[in-house]
Length: 280
Image 1 (cartoon, rainbow, N blue to C red):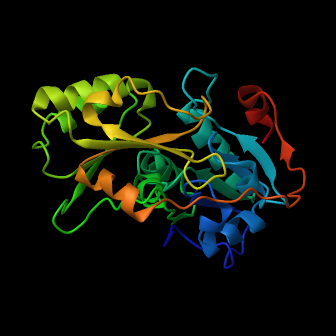
Image 2: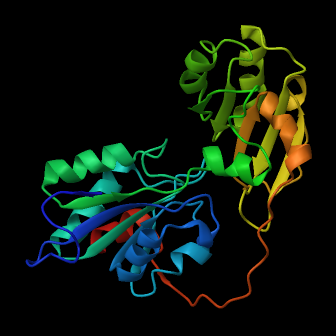
């Protein structure tokens, strides 16, 4: 989908172009063909903190710039990201804004699209596979299944103000609940569902580092979710699944991504994002 005045191939003036690209759940082979092509064409790459180096390394000719917003770590504010994208495009660069999963699912992709539109910058959206579906699937958990769940809801777990109103409105057992970015708040997430009337015996799962060699799956019950010990690296991204479909992981089985040994090269990286942003 191309939104704006031109496409990268058709650009005839000095104005650049921005691609808002979904990186998928982590495995480079789960990128779309278009996403891989945009990375190869990029002059400037702005990437999220959870995007693995095997993916960013595909942008072999680009200047690399981390705009990570990992919890508890120094972050680049959203306005700075907008400014860097706009400045790069105005200098004639092909800019790729690489986002975890899908750009428009809990990733502020809509805000970035609006900022580009307001600045008159041509851009496109390249959808990606969201971890909300991919992480459970790779763990052997279909988010919908005949007779168990006819639908699912996806919510951000980074703050109680984001998930409590939604989870509080879901009828217990009526659908699969998927929580992204909720590992730190899983005790409160579980308590919210239990207070709403969910059965503590409801199957639950946490898929960690899905689609990568570090992948790990915890399965149990909703009543155990808040205090369960998760055997995975502390920085591993996690997807919480609550619902009867979580039981299917034992029957279907998961898909593990083998480690890769290919040399991806050494991309150029800018240190000190706030200071270096002025130079891009």
